Image (cartoon, rainbow, N blue to C red; front, side, top):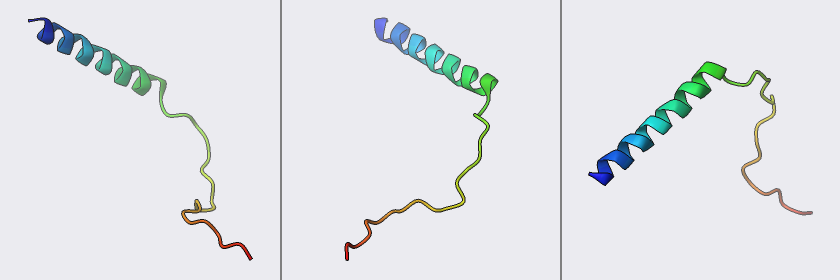
Length: 44
């Protein structure tokens, strides 16, 4: 029974976080036009 209560509390907390983030919205900003480097450049 304690496991069900703990699961319900965890689910409610996760849902509250999701709704809060959704209500606030994504931060407004611009992405960089340059791609991220995925490999280490060779040293000369």
